[in-house]
Length: 224
Image 1 (cartoon, helix red, strand yellow):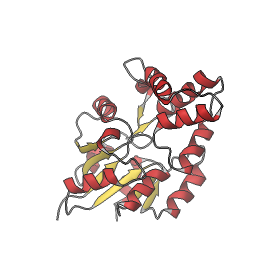
Image 2 (cartoon, rainbow, N blue to C red):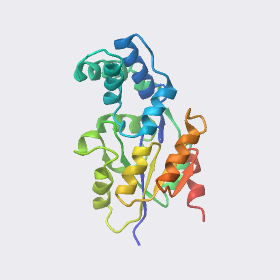
Image 3 (cartoon, rainbow, N blue to C red):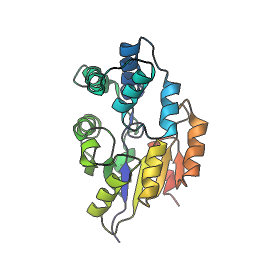
Image 4 (cartoon, rainbow, N blue to C red):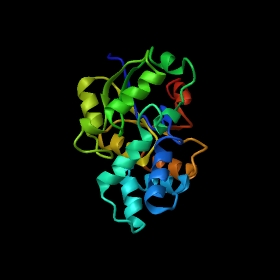
């Protein structure tokens, strides 16, 4: 029997992006419109599905406010405040408690399927989890069809044939991607999430295998 595989999303699963990606959306929208979008409003978009790409979401909110700024300009500003050694990416917080993932890694292989560019994912993994192997890492540019399409999970399945695979994510797009790939989904619904109850119901509606507060609870899912 092959070692089972835990496929992680990154944002909101491995790292808390409240002060990085979510803050970058808010600052980008404010830069172009003069009005800041709240974390609750951002979560409402995420819960509605189809907004896995934070550049596209930022551009949509800017356009909806009546500011007809080209997508590439919005993306360029977003990256200017997000990337680099002084960017918002440095505000990210690793969610796993010391030793938790290492213990899981004794029984599971790890892979990563994220909507962020692969190089940004690798940068964050090097900062926080340099001793752990995630193979493969499937990011934004490794797929043609982004979440909720299952393409990334299907790629990972090809790399781990005949192994049981589980996908761990924090959005309805993650859940829909797993469902389309026929992969059991473990939903992360953090109690601090401004739309926590809505998210739990969305995960249940998608047939989640389990729903937990964060990845530190994963051992309990597989304890039985």
